[in-house]
Image (cartoon, rainbow, N blue to C red):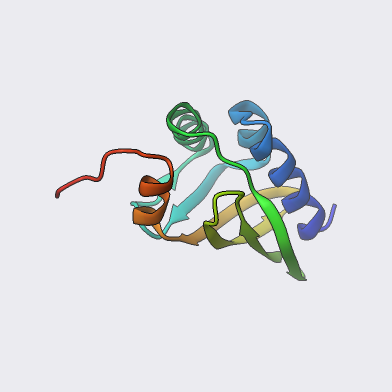
Length: 119
């Protein structure tokens, strides 16, 4: 499976709000680093992160572009509410071993009418 194909599977599982299917796409020691939070390490913790996030808000990922370069893929995305971002995925042996995401957390919180932390 190419890195682009794996990211397409990731989007499909994400849009179903399916933490189990998402977690199964990651290596057991993967790292998911959304730049506005601390890195999440390990498949089980990544699954918990998705479970927590899906319980807070309905999220939809609409693909604008997927670029592939060997083991790496870049997903440029938007959602129906107007939020945009991108994710960078490193894939080895048909599993995500590293992911970094760039998106505006304040805009996300406002769009979903969630509390804004004051820390």
